Length: 332
Image (cartoon, rainbow, N blue to C red):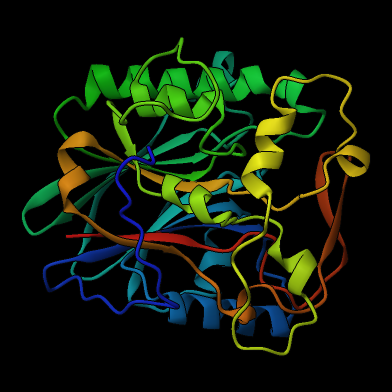
């Protein structure tokens, strides 16, 4: 929703979980494995340090060792570590927050259309100040193959997430976060915001009624979370410009259209894919929110990969941290 502007932008914010607020972030790290270059490892460690979040949801993680390679010992990790999966989701929390349980939701193969491979919905139950919070970490189907062919899969995933919350987490503290591979105006996100599988795509005309999207106001300033590294990989400045003019308008322009060539037709390729939503009972506790804009997150030569016989192979190990940057919010 855009009716109430809750966005306060900072380069980074220091919070203490032992105090009255926690900082929550989501970060898609480009196919992170334990064999990354020393330059990339150093960059990622700096991103994590300067992000300074108490809770971080991760996507595109190869295994637990890959995360342990970049996280300080103060973090505890929840991950369902499958040997044959290279795009797992995970959640890391630091003391005094405690992980009580973690499990996949919709892990059955019949749900693979909505939640492909080990990008199943990860539920992690976390304790903070004697209260329980249920984090649902998402990594929706990508747009590869075209939006007209893949939109329905992301919309199905959102409808299933809504069903799970209504059936199992009603009236609980719920945070849904991750890489949704859609913009906040797209139908899959409106389904989550309104709790309605029939919600249409398009710019919101009323307040969120099921989950409050803490990241949606970023659209007003054309802030993105994916694609900055292509624009600022050579920057020598400490920070980069978050506003990419026309990003939201370009996404809306191509919604629902067929025969779109992404590389030829889509002029503004940066987009806001990574978002954090909270249950309505937490909305009045949402404080500052932002997109991480330290250049260490985008600078450097990119990595390159290919899939061969189902196996991920790096053809070049670059120094860049990721093709996404973290998105964060503070819960009071």
